[in-house]
Length: 55
Image (cartoon, rainbow, N blue to C red; front, side, top):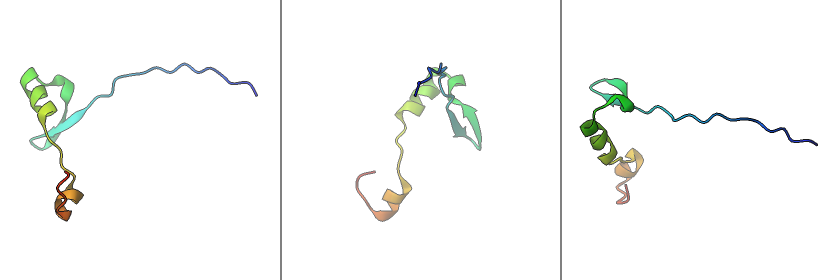
C-alpha cells in the first residue's frame, strides 16, 4: 500500500474572549489588556462546587 504525502497549511488560531457581554478577538487588544488576559486565573466550576483545593 502506497502512502500519499499531504501538504498541510498551519495557521495560528484566533482567540476570542468575552468582554462586557460580547466576544472580541484577543489579537485586537492593546498591550495592557493582553497582559491582563495572560494573567487571568481559571477555575473549574466542578472543583469549586465539590470543595476541592486543587483548582
